[in-house]
Image 1 (cartoon, one colour):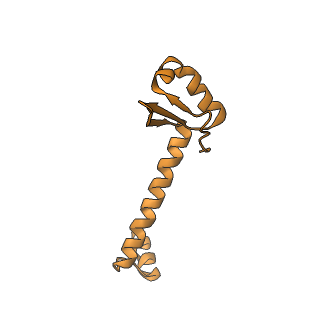
Image 2 (cartoon, rainbow, N blue to C red):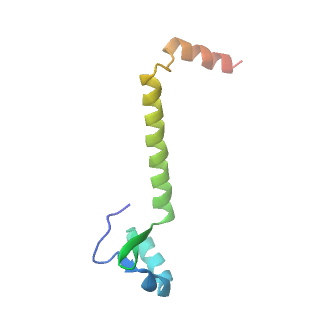
Image 3 (spheres, rainbow, N blue to C red):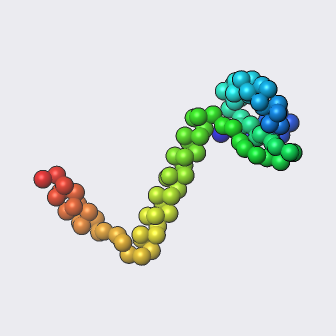
Length: 92
């Protein structure tokens, strides 16, 4: 995901509603997320479907690493030989 350009990528909700097709096309062209404001404050961020998928994928990856580290810290691990044995058992 590209960085937000504060001079170009922040839009009030009223303007977004009036020109939604324009803003969707802009996201497709530039790859920049659009910050939508309401009453002068950020209310939402519009990103491309590809950027959204990438963000979710990164979140799941980081979560799996955290779970693995937690398992290692609490001793919920297998030796290489134990793992090989389990994999061989699955093959039968």
